[in-house]
Image (cartoon, rainbow, N blue to C red; front, top):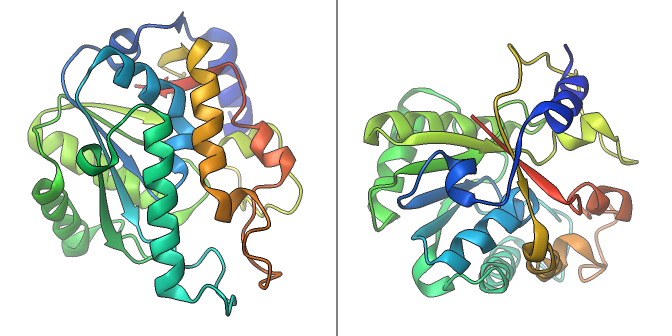
Length: 253
């Protein structure tokens, strides 16, 4: 079964819950790994808002620096763009009810260069242990079939980290949704075929969907014409944004 059909099956078959503990398989501190600044909001923003509302310890780590979203911009060269995207991530997690000073870290790995294996992956896991302020009970990372190399690599890091600290492992979907409803202008590459039947939950965004929308909008460099001098730069077109306005988020086991 190809990825798009697999996700449609997950949307139809997985049980629905509005309880973060049910979706995550229990209570305890939650670590979220985001490949780029904005993935935390796009993929699991409502779940994060629900955890924050309950007072659950949450820490978000943005793995890559995001500097390649607008590589030809003169107004926003690499270091300025990195600083901007970090500021946007701080604003986004604040919209979700988290404390940016306490609940957010940046690993600073190169955009489109997150290691997927070997000694570099082990070094990334060790670096994560140095910035996360608790031993997580749950590690939530991107779906390993998301069609972006940094997402797949971050998923591998999540697997290694969860195994090392004996945490539960869960995943969220970002660009996998494009296999279900392809937005214009996105090159998805070959469609993978996930193994087995979907397992996990559909988390009901409910009242937290409004916070998720505000968090996504806080990433203005990715969702608006803020950076106007790079015609090759990345921008979430309305059709892409619509993928993340669904009333449920997938939390896959």
